[in-house]
Length: 300
Image 1 (cartoon, rainbow, N blue to C red):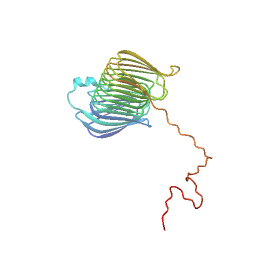
Image 2: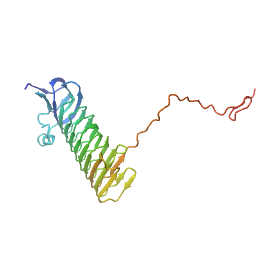
Image 3: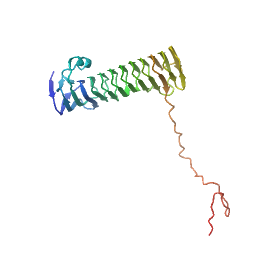
Image 4: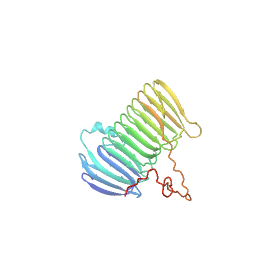
């Protein structure tokens, strides 16, 4: 296969051939990956410090990394590198590209791809927007924000907070003291959340049935307008009829509060009658010579 490679130490723009897979491994800085409708990729390096950035196109796989980092094992980088290396990179990739990103302290933005993704970070914040396909995120302390996901979501984190919205049929999260906020569209199939002290909030569309199994030591439970305190051990709550499609939700928490809420019903606008004639209210009519109660007479 044809191979192209670049070693970048200053701002540079690189247009590549056809790309079907992207791998990124950075120590620090920022990487923005945005989908476009072309089969090729464009790499814009805005800045590099500490160590040069290696960019390589091997067949249809585009790799962008600090050479000392394995893109699938950013934690291993900490054991071997004590210096500082940062890069600020923007990448346009085809929508069908498979994306794998591993960073130490770099921020990550991923938007618009439809083949899912795998993201690994130590302390960098992660933002994913408009992704289709299954998403896996492994983080230590960086926050994770996922907007409008259409696919399953798997998260492993220690203390990074998690916010996720979209049509997510299956959700799995394991954390220590991470707060988890879910806003789910449609009727999800299953959600599994394990946390020690982080709070959990799940918002469903109006009327979505669910069965919630909670294991907790001291957290407060809220199911719509019902609040439950003093639960120690297992508690099961059913909302709606469990027939056909419904959410099977399981939450294990030591001290975090847990809430399962429904969105309010969608407001409906009354249909207007095009043939209806609206006559403005002009108040009570008066006969000639009579004076209305609210009429003021000004003397000549």
